[in-house]
Length: 135
Image 1 (tube, rainbow, N blue to C red):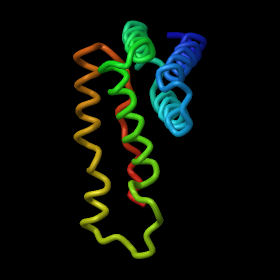
Image 2: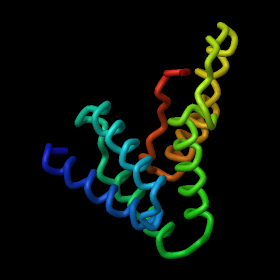
Image 3: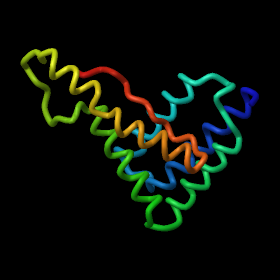
Image 4: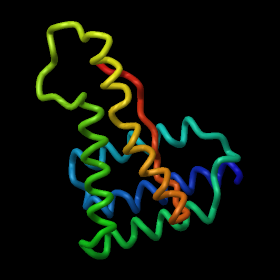
């Protein structure tokens, strides 16, 4: 894909994602941050037009009806939002032990694996990554 095609893919995914979450406040910022991170980390050879079209179709179905697609998008964005916040309401004052750091860094591995399997089975390109900052 050319650079212009990648920019258009980002804009289409972002626009359709905003429609799917109905422009709700925490979800739109989480969606924006995840898409930015996915497009910045990936190379131009990683983008496949068919996968992007399948993802757009998935987000379109999430927009149209309140079915399984909408619930998947809603729950993914909720988990990603909690992950960005650190999963807690207020900051901790004590230093984490080595075991706690290990748990916090591997907590979302099974979720990312499930997202990769969903992408593989449906031919989509939902971002499945974790920023490894336990604090």
